Length: 282
Image (tube, rainbow, N blue to C red; front, side):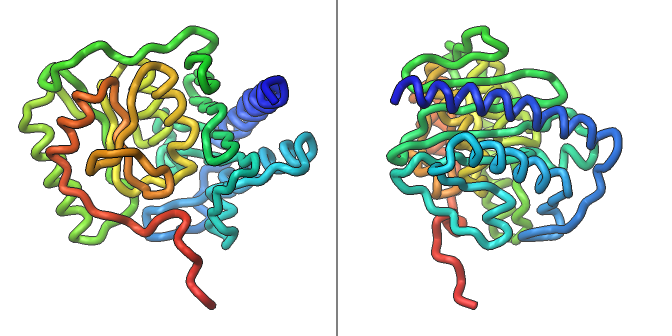
């Protein structure tokens, strides 16, 4: 299977690069919002849908038995069901709001899982032309150069990344800002927000920030990035500690366990609806 998965990863890299070219062209020509999803700030454009269709069509032609979890497919009513079968987990544009505003952190994210375990992850930061790749047990790379997480062990000398997502319910916002306030007041050296979960996880893997946490992300946001972090020497953890569940929509990605556990102490956690929750009956 080793050669087969490498073939799949090579295909993911090629199609991510082709998708990135489509995104760059659309930035010049068509960034109009087509619709919203869960809220008025949860945006989708025609480019999101075109890129996802391009990726799925290309993969189906080469690997006809493989399955898919795609952000726009799930939004259209497809189940978000991760089984033991080979499954491609796709975010065609991670950072759609960034894309609409031409804010420069926009990524194509492709994770590939077998037996519910991520075998490879590809994140292409389109505007920076940075191709992040990871293969389970073989390290993480950016444009072919090895990645290594930061060696910083003191959270007071750390930069922490986070996002606020698209949930604007008062209770969720209150908990997010409560967590942020406590983390800022540790104190940490800084807090950053790239507007893309995939990019934030690449920043952890690259050693640019020490940790990233978020409640409200989706499996397609973090499937590829999660492998990049661990293959670069980092750790993943749930926001309440313990093993991360990619379907839970909660994650901490950090350079080491000590920092991750310190962040856990400050998070005012809550539980969004899981990605794999049964669809409501019509």
